[in-house]
Length: 349
Length: 147
Image (tube, rainbow over all chains, first blue to last red; front, side, top):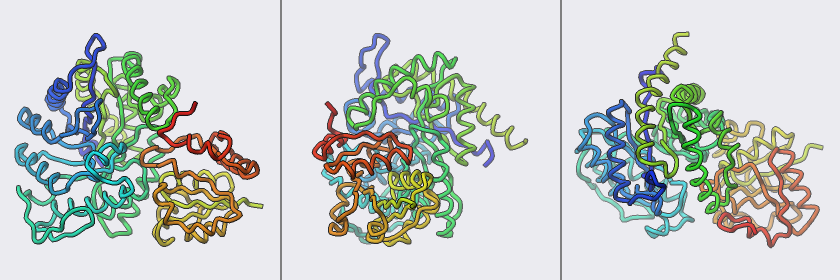
């Protein structure tokens, strides 16, 4: 993998941010701010802008395709994707029509990461049973892949009406919507991505990136056993870039603390401590610091996990819009070129 | 004597525990939801040194058995084969939602069994926490606050 082939993405869940006075801003403003953030991302050379899917009051990313279409109208080159689409509770036919249309309006720039989601809000909201967690994803991925690769589709399953010789519009050239499988550490999900012949996106929000090296090996060996070609591997992790390490840590920590305290209360985790946060920043999965620090940490992860894509979920929690813009600017102008340089130097040596 | 550990479930939690238990010197057998061959590659790569088997064989094999499958999968397991075994219920800890923490909590009514489990947890490098009688197990579910 040469350094030039590396793709750098920015990911966001459209968190409801605060203003300079610490007050939460309105949801509609959050959505318009995200469009501005994506426009800036393109202008500083980022390869893709990817939006999550949640159904709760702190995130405004419940209809990513609409936001991405608005971004498409303001940009020329940047790829527009999801991180992730919760396929388990979506109708694959609707997901296909939304993103085939986005692909058309953006001139072929749509992409997807599909996953089961780490939050479960969408299951009761759309009338699905969590007991079907595994089967829902398997079945819906099967249908989505057929719609993307091989229309007309004749298909039947447990969770929706069958299709008979069905054409779904708009048509797309085969493979024109790159579709990745998002994996949070379940071995079965890694094997599933290999079985469907789809690239693997690892979501790692804590611990050393090297912990996931066995999953990379599992994926490669499963592809080999199935007689499939090698496929790209990506990493999604969290981070924040500022002029200095000290500034980045000081800005990010209070918002990280707040976000993970909420998660801890809801999900039975232990609340975060400052020491754990610093450990994550030093050698774990928080890419926080000056451009040089973050570039070195990303380059290490790229080498350790043989990555061809790195997505940074920029600015964890309610970090204000102005500081999100500043982090995008530094990531695009300084971090990405420096990572390419570090990896290029590694190859030459 | 090499202590024998059985793990039912070869997901993130099951393979993580298996890897730690093999490193701590346990003889580990584990099973997935299908035939043993289905998890062969997963176990070979993620928990080298552990053996794959059917769930019945895993239970037969081990003195201490960890159930590392989601709660809604429990009804698919054979209930009558667990008699006389120390059973660790990791099921209310649902890996896709909860991730892998470095602390495992034991609750039980048989002090010897709780002791065996605490020893297991300590040996494989997690932090054991005795949560008292089994009725307290309910408080270990993610949505419930300790108080």
